[in-house]
Amino acid sequence: MLAGLIIGGLWLFLKYGKYGIWIRATTQDRVMAQAMGIPVPLVYTAVFAIGSAMAAASGVLFGPFAGVTQTMGFDFTLRAFIVVVVGGMGNLGGSILASIFVSLLESYASIVVSPAQAVIVSFVVLVMTMLFRPTGLFVPTPK
View 1 (cartoon, rainbow, N blue to C red):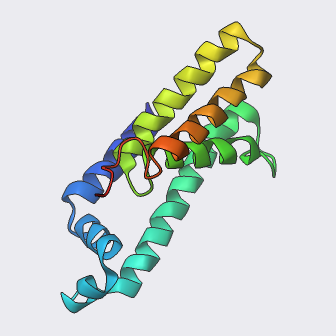
View 2 (cartoon, helix red, strand yellow; view 1 turned 90 degrees about the vertical axis):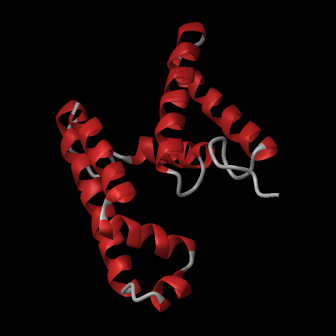
């Protein structure tokens, strides 16, 4: 519930907030954003801070479930990479949909085979995405 609120708040911030518009403009074209008066180094610093806050929030939310250790995020780093590639780099909505898609595929695969082997489905989705839609499933293909 709280994770959904955090993701929804981030999406609203990036879509409608003044600084979210600055972030999107800097992502699109750094030189033009700087020419329009956007403080690009400050935007980079803010994006790093937002990313760090999101990582801290995810650690705090996940800590009670698995216990806090130095390797608690190791298993999920690979899944996060798969989700970002499948959803499309820089596409928050695509990453959210890809995370739901990949997790459901893994869950359904764990019914048929063991959960340790169900991770293979994620890799198959990753490879198929890279073969047929290298920019991601939810990003328009450049022409």
